[in-house]
Image 1 (cartoon, one colour):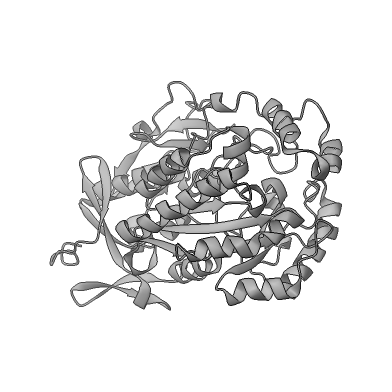
Image 2: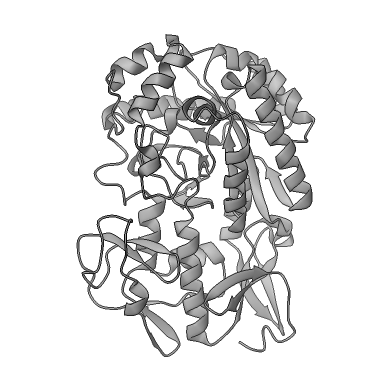
Length: 456
């Protein structure tokens, strides 16, 4: 029950000791955990709510401390997994079409979608998404439930141990404040033809990005273009099979298609995958032969499949690293919300960086061809470039984040004489940070004290 906590902080194991109190009740529900944190799952009481709105029971009332070890009325790893794997969504989030289109069925819509003018698609999608902004959970525009839950657990552990400083391995290499990923799903031949121009624009801001290519039917990506993308320091990944919306429709069809997807991945040397329209079934991810996936949104209110992982950090789904999409996509911003500014992106960026998280973007070459949209994208690049300088944000490729996160997962903080040190491959890029307890709140710091080890 301590695994999720220790994997997240990579702190000495003694600080991740939690015990379970009593038998867990069914069914699962929402509850509060300390100041601001929300949980979803089974607890050893009946004080659970079917909705995250309204007054929630604070499970902190059910916590006790024995021999410096907190005893909890829930399994923390299970609670975190319920968010990350979207188990809080009623029904089968992964296999069902939710947010039903009112004008057309899903099958009919995707049959004619490639030839529909954008204004028709906007009209249909706005109908299907009616009421999205009234959803209480996940919290729009960024949900940080996982991070807030971890902070509450950390503060509890520190109080139980009688300490006010705790060492852990910082989230990003070289002490970067946060991380930014720029990715591009290429949906049409027009978008494919704009890829080179997209890289030209990004070169001006020292941005390298990842292009997700559809292997079948939509277009044929020439090998020399894929080689050019890589030669210019960017990355090529796989985007679905044919983007018809049916990849996760039923298990037998998925098994047939995923074999082809995996073959395409090997053929073009792709490490990453993103599904069409962010459809997903996490129970089937073991069949994907990729290092990482980028198909789960932080908040899915503006997507056909509801849900969201409620975290701004990478996490593992089995052997696959999930790099969640933490910001609004350009299509939704421009054509659903009708917003041609970066104000919403700036708001999301600020919220994500408060948790030192992952700023992941999906900007389609197809939708930034018009000058108006292109100007907005250039403004976003300017803003990100400034953040990298002023906030020490790491602008990385997905494969670089994947490599770092796997290395960090294998690192440990140990004592060596009177100092904390990091052991494991890649340790030269890692930094020790400190969680500092101030009242009931936890903040992070790189400041070291002489007595940090001796006090333990």
